[in-house]
Length: 498
Picture 1 (tube, rainbow, N blue to C red):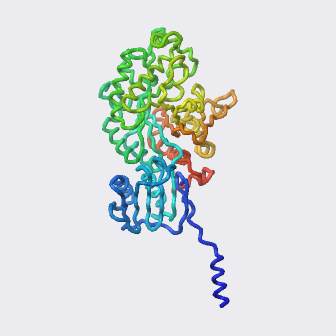
Picture 2 (tube, rainbow, N blue to C red):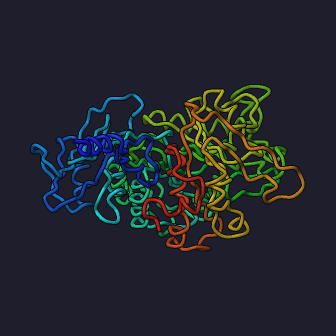
Picture 3 (cartoon, rainbow, N blue to C red):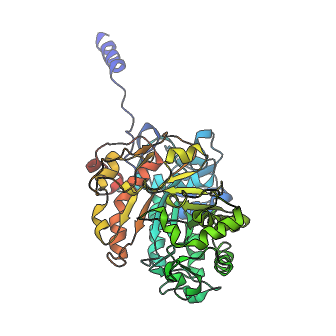
């Protein structure tokens, strides 16, 4: 009698088996409650989903070589559902339950899709996922990649692969910089004379958008203007800005000419309907006063004359430039979209300000307004700060990138820092980076920026390999979940990366 009682007491005193630890995904899950055991994908496993989620179900089934169905789920199936509760889940969050079957539930399709990406991550390396429950959502709305495809052409197939990789990391914005001094890389039916080869066609864009839509990636097109236009203006010297000595500036559009605005209106009328996303990027950077001073405007008296005539005494040359950017913004708004600009193009005007709905991609601290100041004025802001979000190929700047370790261990999306510091320049003390509140509602997010300052310094394959680890870091930082490790060497091994 004593022995059975002792055995029972020992059983009661024995510790319960611990649940499964939080799995090593990139990005990490926001919340995890571990169960016991694992879920295995079998040959009989099906993906069950309602009609509205059929496309996401087919994609997951193809990834796992399974069948889809709309029948009653059974043990071993993967079930996709809409209708999750919890305001915090937002547009892209989801709930994941892994037991005898897997259930992914979200408020919106994007959330269901991201749940399927997490499941794929968990199943890598053996086809088994730990049982448990997760609630997961992003901190930032935008988690992106900018590609300078004006200087170096990125083929459609290469871009398609980046979209797939981004989506698996829950990155959701692809910003394509189609034009620069070295090339204009987008087919134009209204002005075919300005297009360089190779370039993307309208059909390429439609194909990319179909893929991006399925993967919940938004494409943001950019035609940088009124500067950075050497390639586009080569056939149109009559539209180039001329200084007081009669010298044409090959890269600058004369924003005071009606013919110049007609030229731009033609392009916008062609492209705005082509791109289905909510954004249009107008660039608006590095027009005048880039390196020297604002006195550069004195070389172009037609700018101030235009502004004086339109806005009255007290206007200056920069007002004419901002007026042009607002002209682009009017076209963009008429198409039901919003404009974005680079941060350095905003300051300098006397009477004209950038239209209030335009969002800003902040990248430098020499001339740009501080991020906190822009946010206080109600601007929506994306962190594109040079350090550590610039990946420049070729020339002296290629060697001035932040390291992957620095990006992971020293940076967060609310940390804004430009290039003009003693990391690379000598003399003045290094300024403090700009810090904004971690959960500021008008910070859209952050993006990695690939600039091909010296075209062909790297191949597109080398660029893909070089940015892959940085995209993983960006995914973790912008998703904003608790990091599984603070050490970059350990982070490199998470999620089956090595």
